[in-house]
Image 1 (cartoon, rainbow, N blue to C red):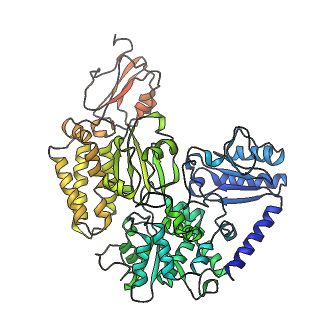
Image 2 (image 1 turned 135 degrees about the vertical axis):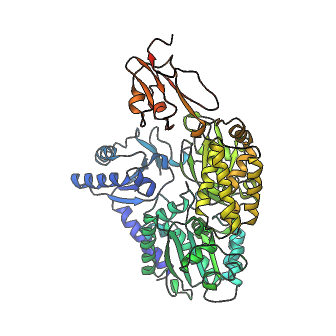
Image 3 (image 1 turned 30 degrees about the vertical axis):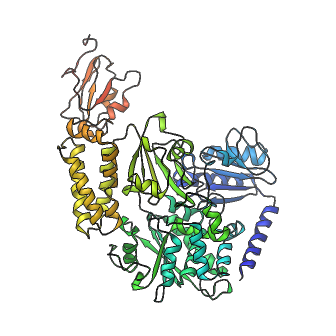
Length: 636
C-alpha cells in the first residue's frame, strides 16, 4: 500500500465519522488521568450512554499535559465548539450527559476551555489558558487530541507524511535536513542529531541497528511515557526516518516494564504498521526494509546510558563500557548503532513533515526547537509542558506553572533529574537552554523540573538525590561506586547534626573527583545536586554544620517539637494521635511532650487545631516548658 492510499483511506474513514452526526467524547486516560480516576469516569460514561440509549463515540486519548486537573473530558458535538472539562468525576460525567448531550446545555460553569469556531460565554479558548498559552507543541502535538490506538487519527493530522517525504530523498539529504533543523538529542547529552546520524551512516559494517531509548528513569519525569501513551506513531515514524538515514534494517525500543500502558500502545501501533505496510520489508513499496522489536527493561537507572542499555539488550548485565569505540562504530553486537530517545524521535517525524527551517525557527542560536518538561514539586500547576528553547525559567514557573503553592516563597528549582543542579532565586531569569543551564552548574537532562519552596531543605534535597544515584550506580568504576557513597555519608551526617568543619570542602573535592573520574554520565553528573546547593546555598550548609540547625525545619534530627503552655487547651487531640505515646497530659492538664520518646513524626503538629496553634517545631533553639503536665490555667 502506498502512502497516498493509506492517507486516502484514513481521510475517508475520518469523514465518515464526521458526517455521522454522532457526538464524540474523549477521555484523558493516560497514566496520569487513570491515577485521578479516569477509568471510573470512562465506565460511567459508557454505562450512562447505554442506559439512555444514546449513540456517541467514546475515545480514550493521552495526556494533554494539565495533569493537576485530571481527569479531563472533551465533548465534541456536530457544528459546535469542542468543550473541555477538568476534574471530572462520575457524578459530573452523568451531569454532562444529561445537560449537554440530552438538553444541549454545555455547562460553561464546568468548562475548562473550548476549541473550534463559536464561543461560550465565560469559557476561554483552550490554548489561551495560562498553562498552555506560552507553549509550542511539537513533541506533544497530538497528545490528548487523537486516539493513540487508531492509526487513522495520526495519519489525518499529517502522520507518516514525513516518512513519505524522506523516502523521496537520499539518506544524505535526510541527514542534511536534520542538521538544518538544529535538533539536539533530547535524552540529556544534547549532541546534534544530524551529526550523530552521519557518523553511523558512514560507519562500515552490517547490519546497522537503531535503538529508541525509552528507559525514562528520572524521579519526577514522565515525558517519554506520556508521548508513548498518547502518540506512539510519532515516535515510530521517527524511528523509520532515522533508520532510513543511517541504513539500519533492525531496531529496538528499550522501554522499562514499569510502563505497561506505553508498552500496550506500542504493541498495538506496531501491529497496525505491519498491516499497512509501514513496517517490515519494502516499506511503502520502496527498497527500504526495517523491523522493530521491543525490549522491556527491569528499571535500572543506569540502563538509560547507551552502552549499558545495549549490554542489557544483548542479555548481559546493564553496565557502561568505556568509549571509544562509540556506538556509531561498534554498538549492539559490535555493529554500527544509533540511539535516540523518545522525544528526539517524535521531533524527527515533525521535522521531516514540516522542514528543518521551520523547526530551527524556534529556540536560540545553539539550542534550536522546543523542549518538553515534567513540571513538578511545589508549583501550582503541575504537568507536562513543551516550550521553545530559551524561555526564561521565571516564565515557566510563574506564568505556566502558576507560581508556588500557597503563595510561599520560591527557593530553588532542580533541572535535569537526580543528576541535575538546584538553581536559586537569582537565576530565575536564566534562559532555559543547554549552554545557560550548564554554565549555572545544572543540566538540561531529559526534562525533569522540580520546584522547591521555602519549606524545602536543600541539604536534604541533595542527600535525597545522591542517595538515588548512589543506589543506582552499577558499581563498575571506583569514583562512582566509592565516591558517591562517601559523599552520601557526609550529607547524612550533616542532616543528622553531626556535620564537621571542612565537610563542605571535602564534598567539593569528592564531587570533582567523581565528576572527572567516572566511567559514564551517571557518575559524572551525580555530584551536581551537591555542588550546586553548596554553590548557591552555602549559608544553609553552614547552619546545619556550625549551628546544628535546619532553617527549613525539615531534617528531623535537628528539630524539636514543643507544646506551648499558654496556648494548650488540653483538648487531648494531640495525645490521642501520637503513635508512640510521647505526649503526657489529660483532661484539664496542659500537655507535655516527652522528648525521649518523640520520634518527630509531626503528627501532633499537624492535628493541633489551628485556632490553638499550641504546638511549634523549632531547630537550633530551646523553649522553656514544664517537664510534667500542669493544671490548665496554672501557667498563668
